[in-house]
Length: 152
Image (cartoon, rainbow, N blue to C red; front, top):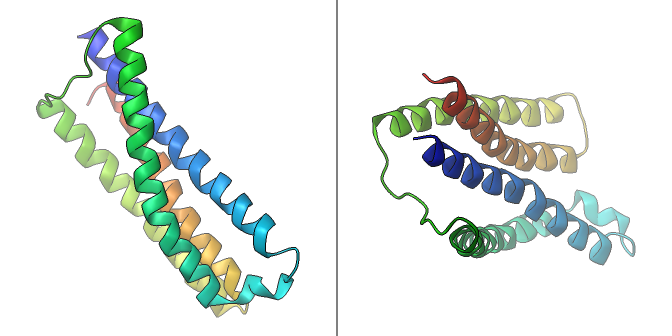
């Protein structure tokens, strides 16, 4: 059972690392490509909407590729397949972690719209919305690892 937990934890860590790394790299690329020549673009909601729409498929493809690479490396190193069977404990941990993740995301949404209520720039709202979504995913991973180690 210990090996199963290790593999699930390592999968969770790969996902968390990806949820942090991919948007940061994407944001840096977009920022460095478009903002230095036109700083007013920070408040252009249409521009950021288009960039976010592009980010979604980029994230999906990148996560799939990263998990495939992880599975290959895991197979080479441990000579074991990644478990595909989930038991009741896995489902319960998923449900509890998703619940906490949704709370984090909801607080982020409230903060984002609160930023507009107090008159901050539109890009603050967008950054808060997008960050809260990714932060919710990271918190979900942290909670899953916590419950796998502690138990439910």
